[in-house]
Image (cartoon, rainbow, N blue to C red; front, side, top):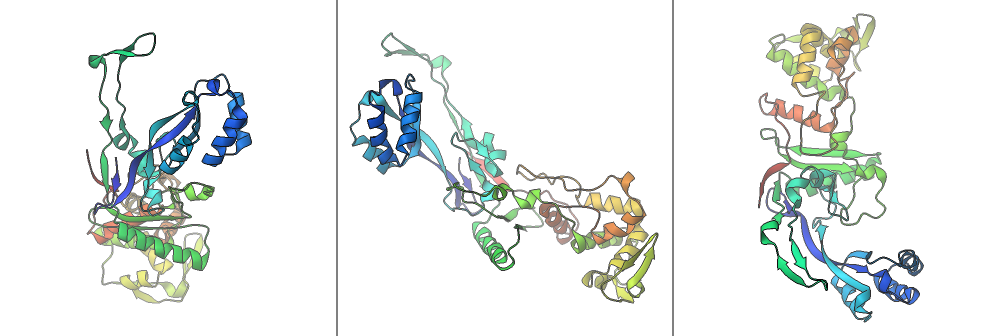
Length: 382
């Protein structure tokens, strides 16, 4: 089945092509055969010769799978004995958009098994089921009868409509590529999400790869950082704690917070701000990213409410998106929290989150407080 973007653009499709096999037992001049075939198929002649000799008693040996029509025609023109070779029709996965959305899509290996992305997680849906035909042959191999009651028709794989918006995906990838070029980071990722539905409109991870050309793909390119990288969220975590405190009516949106002019003792340690702030509004505690202001809001909540807030925004567990390789991040169990946690957690320290967890939690702030499950699939059809 095909994988489409939300507007019907094809992201992954299947074509048929020929694969070449030989019958080594029928090849009397393996060196001559290897020289002729290798020159047409761009295969190392010495290596092909060794394979033919090593398998000389076999009746079947793949030579090259999924070759284009022009190459097939050149091979036919060699006029090699029909008993020595044959062609089989096989399926080949193609990705018309090249490397765009490659981490969302994943790939299919030579045997059409999905690896990574939607190709892997939706493999059973996309791949379909092979048919079966039971036949009776005579001693010469001629079909005498087909047992219809023991045979079955194939079930074709379903077409999947994803939430990805191809134009949004392309634009987002361009921005990430510019970032990679300017700052030369080890890796980077970006996600665009519709906050009410949880639809992922774009997901990018770098380094990337082109699923149509898998030669010399660096090992780190296989990792989708959007779901498998974890980091301390820092100040991006602060709005969740403020929002929870407002919801629990432990904080008023119009009150002022005393930020102690840049130094505040909290238990056994002293917290500092980058600048010396006196009183700040709740809004300015976020805008100026005051650690002291956040710690004082954390004290109002207390450890139990702070833990409940962190869990309620989805941290410490997988979001459930339809992708393999998602990690839960890192959130210590409540029995490991202490007085340090009371100051560290509101600042976005002492925990690790994935980019997908972070944007999903921010979507809850944007949509009025509902934690949605991010999704990549809109539907499927025959």
